[in-house]
Image (tube, rainbow, N blue to C red; front, side, top):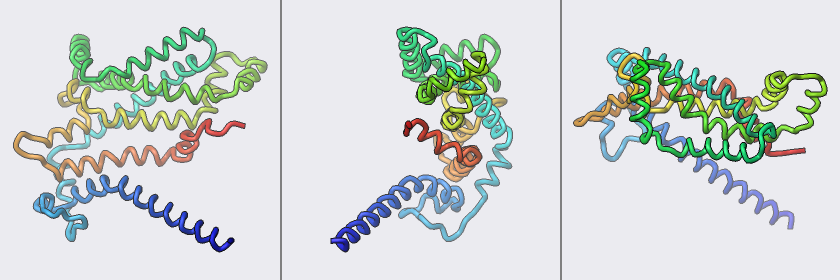
Length: 282
């Protein structure tokens, strides 16, 4: 009986490893294909059947995007705009989520505000772009980083608020009551007690908000022309009516993934904790 149980356990483990490995291959294959396309010679990109393991590589596409395209100013734009948007969206969103998660407001008001935040996120961006373009133009902010930062903060706030509400709701009320007994003011409780407890949740929210701002294309393509142009807009310039520069697009895409990986790697110790925050309650 023990031998049968051991064999079943080994078979189960084998199946689990096979399914996990197959899933990892499926998830990682698009990035692998993006990477090898960026280092293929031009004539090998369009071969059929496709070449999955290139025998010779070329970094000419990377050289071209740095020398011809001049990627550095646009890379700086994307970094400054995305990081500024993350800081403001997480800061403002955490305060809004805290007020909606606690009982400082009546239940009807809180529910109405939460529904309103959700409705703001439900509107497609394309339906708002024309009036938003007119507003930005009228205040003289076209082709500026400030315009994109304000836009991205407004665009990311509903998502940030909804994500952070759950983290604040998982904090025990007794912790805040103890802080009140110690004489902490409202802002002291929020910044010195509550925020450190939801730090993993803040990190998760910051990562997802950064990816939203980093990859945004629609607003950046409409509100910028050159000075504040971001990397997604630059990638769009490689698409023409008669050609597609797959090598340069792939090289730019591979480079765009790196800041997200670096950003997540610095805060990875908080990332898993934040994604499982509140899963177990004592």
